[in-house]
Image (cartoon, rainbow, N blue to C red; front, side, top):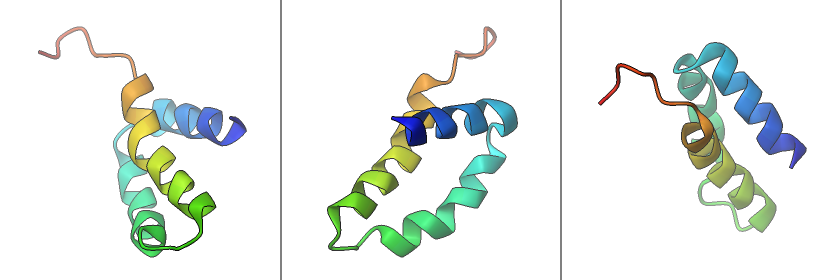
Length: 59
């Protein structure tokens, strides 16, 4: 849960540039046999995007 909270705060602070920082991590662990790393990849891919408030002008 702490990792999700950290990702959420980082996403809110820097927005889209966080994606560039996360790509090497995602690529490195996407095919890992360790389920812990898979879970971390999924958090990095999904959690920040879902929790970000929508901009009022966005359609």
